[in-house]
Length: 324
Image (cartoon, rainbow, N blue to C red; front, top):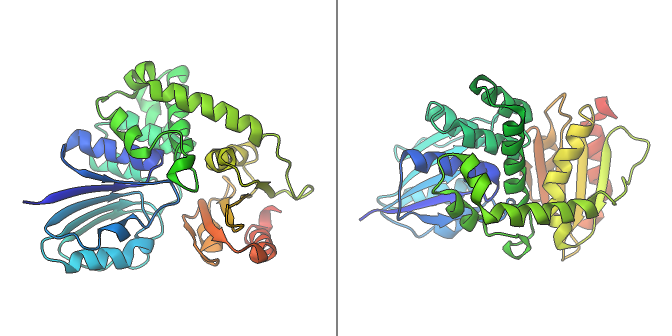
């Protein structure tokens, strides 16, 4: 008997990508493996599986490469991998199927939408909005003649689902990502979820409280076009960090943004957003530092040693020098 695992990023893109896929091809007994948004090496926990089918969504192949190779070394395992982050070389295994596109205007939900020929496009729009791909989300929604208020509802849902994925650990999150995914399973139409889900009320209230705190934090490099913010070691700061960085990026599209959040162990978690007018270099910058990774438009560093902060800031400004 084959055991099936669904392994997915705990943010809006990972959840919406999986939801589309399982609306098309249900696997009711799948074992769910997920975590906070930055917990991307999720395949590390599956090194001993055999005779299993694994579907992986919205997780960097580069970070999971050794785990994938170990899993495929075991008899009877098959892996389907869908993602939009930098992958590096992809090994050729007959048991490995990949759909990986690191283009700056693509997310995993949009990849799945293409594979399914738009069957659940509304959920792809939610995932794209959650990943701060507002132009791509609106481009997909445009031909469907949605009113602006309806589009705004999908935008809010995407941002709230994305907000729920940020934290140093699951204890920071308002709702476990697996529970949020389970909550949307019955809904082919996201507007039905929006109209009835108590989870949305929980996320909306938490979001507004956390954003109120975030907006009180000053920029730490006044006078530069590129903006840097520094948040304290607090659950609200970790929860709101990604959505706050996205909001600031949309406010000032020609500027690059960095949000630094202090971790409990005094290391620094950093979120980087390339200018929306030139979505590149964020991943290259972050991969140059320990625990860094991501994609061209948006990337991050999980645990930067505090003594390296000045080096990071210098590299950040140099990477986006045309915009500073």
